[in-house]
Image (tube, rainbow, N blue to C red; front, side, top):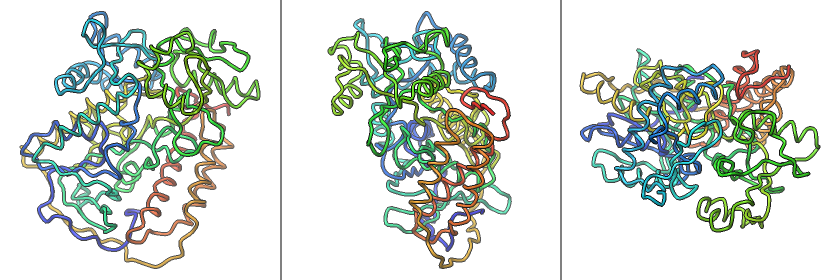
Length: 513
């Protein structure tokens, strides 16, 4: 299926834009800010800037900015966490250029937390052998960074925002080059946007699973659209399941994340008997890479028959915890958990898409004019397992590099003219129970595409998902629900095919058969 809808959209603006950025997380906003001010840019977001994985990110941004640290040490930790699957050239770009981008955020006014001496407060998270995580608002780094960048981008005369606009498809010309995009605007009308370049920064795929730290809008729209346009994907089998999602029976919607930084500040993982079960499983125990901790928890739950374990941070006082982790502290209190006195119930939950749209070190895909950065991209820096807090750094480095490459292309006079593709004719068709289809896909993926996988389970899930795809008709105009269902099915299929193709267990992809 080349396009996810039928009918013919109206042209939104006859002049178009030099760049269309899809997504208002850190990657998309920083890329917009790094464009030259004579480059016209349109940013579209499914809801608003406050609904994204970036906005929800708690931990911080990893960069070798202290005197004791060095990019080479950051490189080593990243390669180890990536389990031999990282693109070392991409990692070098990340760790060598990242510190300048972090300091650029400081100069732009992002309110990072400071220590008693007035310097940047730097902490440590899982997989890091050095303190190199800067944070803002205690445990609200994503929120504070997104707010600061959005405020700055809003002042740029060359940028317009289209909120509550649903990105559907990448339009290409007869040569396969980007010529525009199809979207559903805030009024529910199909529109075509003419553009020379598209940056996909749509974030994650959380709605493919039952339980996720992602918001409800994370349906993999950008990755699915890129697949339809002929872009290559890589690493789709590598899904990061965060070890410590807050476990609350009966809770609905997004799972609240208990940041790895809690363990970085001394939190211990314990079972119901109070035993620290991660000791002896890895030299870093609770601070081992996330895939190892997640599997350790799953093994403990399997052995005990329990449905959750605990994080114990009660050795720290109320003053410290409420100041260092205000978001976590108050959310847990809302559930009747005083983290200064009570253990926090947790279990693994889908958190981050490690793979995605395959790019080079300038965020370019194999489709001319199409770029990807942030969680939707597979730059190669994470390998088989993302090192904690490298994700926001990746957003900065490769968002900037995408902007630099686009500006260079425009200066060289590159670009394509807009041509309206021939879309399938609109046809009436019975609409299936889309909620039931989405829920069945989530259940299949949560059972067979989770932390521990089997060949039999994945084959069973893939066969059923292919059957469900046939029930979803080519979408009619103004039906976001149908496009999202198609996208979720597309992403689930891609994950399972990649997971079945990789026979060995490595990093976040772990098979027992």
